[in-house]
Image (cartoon, rainbow over all chains, first blue to last red; front, top):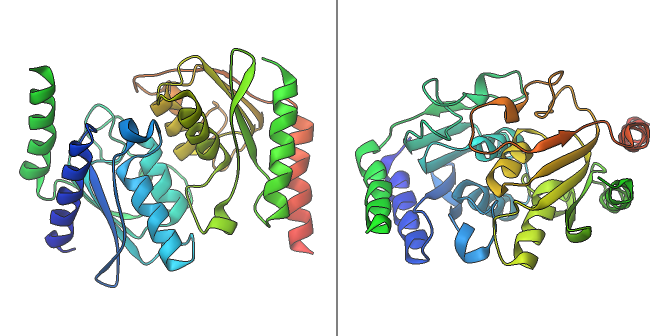
Amino acid sequence: MDKKFMQRAIQLAKEAEKNGDVPIGAVVVKNGKIVGEGYNRREIDNNPVAHAEIEAIKAAGEKLGSWHLDECELYVTLEPCPMCAGAIINSRIKTLIFGAYDLKAGSASSDSVINLFDLPYNHKPEIYGGICEEETAKLLKDFFATKRK
Amino acid sequence: MDKKFMQRAIQLAKEAEKNGDVPIGAVVVKNGKIVGEGYNRREIDNNPVAHAEIEAIKAAGEKLGSWHLDECELYVTLEPCPMCAGAIINSRIKTLIFGAYDLKAGSASSDSVINLFDLPYNHKPEIYGGICEEETAKLLKDFFATKRK
């Protein structure tokens, strides 16, 4: 795990914010190199499935020429929702590193709604949560504070 | 619910099979009209997230100009996996109609790994499973029988 990749995910989250989307960013890394990047594009693309993780996983599959991402790490600024946790299972991502916890919609830690990775699906990544937590949580807090104004 | 839409999903599943992909198809319907179609493109696109439901939901959002699909029904030939069940939650799809049950990876019925819709996420669609069950199950059974040869 290398926090510089979380810093890149944070930069990508800020791209989402420029579009009026909730700031969430993600990168897929293989052998120390970024092979896919994505950020939330739900509003700008009118696409309910365009979460940061989905975009980054799609980009990585295209770049690597395979849907098996079993040697890859995914860095994302927020704990994945069930859709994105499912995408991690489907793509066989080896390691998940996420920033802020999401107790309301999260699906990757024991304090959240559910840890999907504890269920008997056929893939279990290693998981590290709360990485650069203060910074990644602040991104969202500031975004919603501005929205409420 | 109208079985003619499941028949269209079955046709789409056969398109996936032509590409060497597992035959799964889906349509999104609003007010009795198809607004999005999709089929599994995992192998041909090297994209682990290109499941039929994801493709159909994306197409519907683009066509309707909104990521809120709250007046829409989703027809799919196989019980959704966790990723696709999560996509249904994220898109606020009103009704899920699926064909064959998937006890190993399914996430939308009480006999499967989990029913994600029973968890306290902020959306709960109506669910009808086992529609055109024999025909939708046969699609998959025949596909895997041919693969094993």
